[in-house]
Length: 235
Length: 235
View (spheres, rainbow over the protein chains, first blue to last red):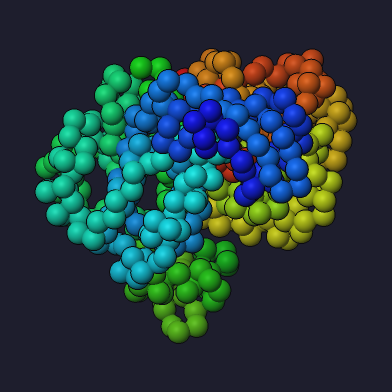
């Protein structure tokens, strides 16, 4: 992009502008800078190869989503589906961790490398029209994460732990957080062990529930984030 | 199963009992009859081939989930993922329909045949520990469905239409339904047309929102059902 905001696109974005949006000269389109502001692009020219836009941007980027997620690494098939969904629903930070019931080989997957997950996150952001890329970190020791790292990563957040049962609903707990950032922990499919539950409890995590149905990790994450955001809406 | 509730299992359920639950003689396990009650099975014997249980069941099946879903047929890749998730989240009826922005070839998929989707629904029910199989119907003409069929399929339900924008949230609308069954309509990825919105509006559908983010159909369905069930919890 030059200093006048003029950009020449020849990648998938150009294809989308031509084949899906069927843009023509003078047409305005929504644009956004990765981790930057939204804006509007004016189509200056369309050829078979290149779409040229002149872009103007808002003065500031949108707010980072107010929910962070601490998630026991799910099996690769589930993790693959999750990246774009998490970005689409809106999450500020994704903290992936080991746990007793996480199989060791789940850490070998290329889905935990930035080169693989970043395009999936961007896909979700495009879908949902957001620009804020979730910050991702991967931790191989839950104890070290919770005891030594979490206060730096999420210094002032309300800490919630999703667990099946009778606890208050996540929407209610987020409503009570009253605008403060929320860190939501979601366990492995086999659940947290008693030791792990004790560790979380000793570090200010409060249990929340979403009913008695046991859900697959990806279904649970989507459902919990939807409820958490909805709780925030009504804060 | 004989008249004393004794059943000999030699399929995937036997494998699950042996290899995942590691059952032994005398151990109680949770059981459920498809579209029937929950119960408890006592392990009477375990061999390499067969697990024998004696089952007792509760007098009545669990209640059918109070949310029904009217869904524009999504692309096959998304539909494949949705079946088990919908059953796991809990939905009484799944009404699949054509719409202007549904591609015609979406109806050619084997994923719309009972032989293919029923095992996926059962997988979701097992995950969530439910027995009530959602009733499924497929409709090739939205107008005929809404004008002529819907009053028979869902005679007394509160009708909601999910649409991006400023409408009240789905959780709020379900809360106001105050225990009545809710029928929730979810559109194709390109949205409903103005004609379709008018059709729904003329047949008592009220618009609800879940915020300004545009979500993929599977993410949207999971998020909306989570919100709808949560609204019901607080009715």
